[in-house]
Image (cartoon, rainbow, N blue to C red; front, side):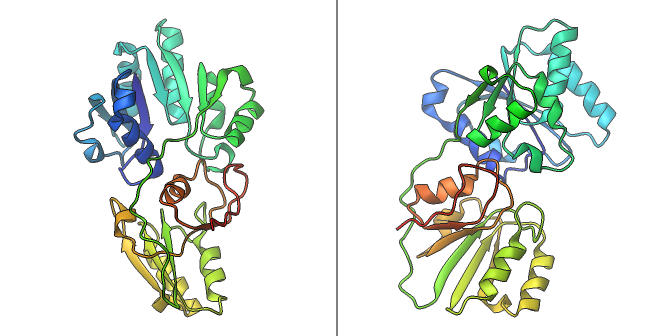
Length: 289
């Protein structure tokens, strides 16, 4: 089986899911995988020493034409039976190559973001896949609205491993909050709303932020609100859960999430989760007591 993924750096939720699949002994008993990474920011460093991985191919050219030609050549030559694609563009290319060159493989779309909330995503390309794996019920509805037959859609949630790393809630008078994810003041992650809400709290609080992105913009806005002394930027950390000590709640104010891996991981830690997310039925206002 071939997994195709664009622009993966090893620091996102999609990488977490793929890593789990490539490490799982239960999955490895039945499947072995090849991995095709496309896009100019893709990196293969995060997939070293994976038990279920046979081969890795990178197509990271800046030129869209060169990337297209290399992708067509790759799909024409591949011997795999199934292609699991996490991006609409490669889903379309693999499907067209299959039709023109009469390839026997199955093209399976496996999207990890809200289809209609992502800019510059050609969601109509997904219709060309043979089968669709939806990571939640809302995504299934989105695919059906594109014209995909519901019989071709299977809902399979992302895997999460339970852990005992969570050290319990803080005993301090200062409430300890964490955020794990890409730093975006606006756009999907919507950290501006989180900072606005925190600035209005009448209790003492502290926020640790694990992630990379619009760091300078976040610092400037926090200073504008007068809350910068209550925020600590941790940067990107490979295993942020292992670094946390006595956390009261994970915060998330995304405008949209495909699955919300960070929420599932936090719940697996028996952490408290407070969030504000729209459109995705999996993600609701939670108070875990």
